Image 1: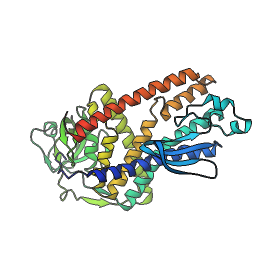
Image 2 (image 1 turned 90 degrees about the vertical axis):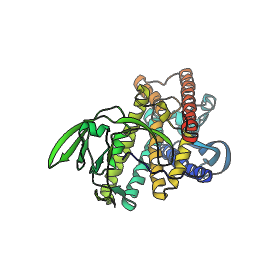
Image 3 (image 1 turned 120 degrees about the vertical axis):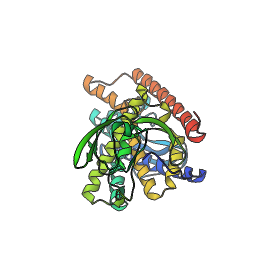
Image 4 (image 1 turned 120 degrees about the horizontal axis):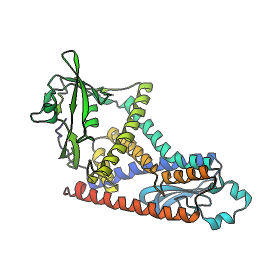
Length: 381
């Protein structure tokens, strides 16, 4: 559990191609969520773009929507009729000049619940994509399962101090059922310095062992620097009956929902730990880090890359729900205000909020990019 055999990382071509595939899929489905719900609500859509900046190529559909692939592959947008840009900022000059027929299919003139449903559909589409991917992955690829057997306890480790012994069978971690030994590091790694209660079976009896994972800086299997919590137990795959287990449709769907929820809760927990200083902000990753990891994961095979798409899809969906102006979550906050007060936030207040939100996102992007360069590319810091 605490040692990792390093593998060669991906070359630049593999990294770039994998990154483009992953981000294009995730962005397309996010924007498709907005697009479909907007169409169902009778909104005219001017453009559907994957990427920002100059258009590389595109076409117009029969409804007048311009479908296009743009030069900068770091996101995308759906531009509704009457919007100033892809961030759904209304163009008041255009809106005021609209005919009654145009107003009927304008996003800005839809009821607040319709606008909220259209905005929320993007992140929801990301979650749905992840659940679908996880479901089919569990059905046709399966996952590695090994009995949660402690084969050895490392001397001087947190586990030894807590009283773990070889032969213990882990049943629960903080009340969460453990079906496979591979479930344990997923719960331990994000929680350095936080006490976890392990319920183990020993000689037919159940014991509770409180243990606090120790923070360690190590290299992952591709040589990337990471900070993780470790307790110092290992598992012998042969003794623990390691195997690949495939799921039936119902079980796979249930497990897929669990996996999606697990990523959401652990991401929020990790963010809170960064805010409180429990873990370093160096753990925050940006486009460069995602690109590098995409390439590394691609070297493990299509199954690993597909599951990485699901993980990134959940992360993008969750990020967009944060209540930051310019993101979907910020728009939802504006619509909640409008629903409660009976009138929208003033144009000046919205414009100021968008500027603050953009500044915040740019700041986070700079921090994340610096982290990627310093710890994932050059491995210093």
